Length: 110
Image (cartoon, rainbow, N blue to C red):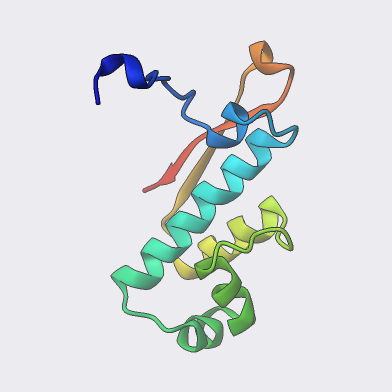
């Protein structure tokens, strides 16, 4: 195999946009929030049932997030779940008019 056998293409940082998904920024934002929720669960060694009892959200919701089944979640619901798990979290949303007026999420962190 040599260099002419494939072409290296750099992504935009949003895999959904790279595949021309019409809801790319929303899906990226949900994925970032879900990843942070999973990280908090892992950092604290929380089962989905323990997270449910702590937050009041259903254990099935945390299970769906762990399985990346995010279609049933709104962005604000994911933010509320994350805030219920970690009240110190700060989410920043950056709007970029150059991207067809869609919202771009820069990340979720402390």
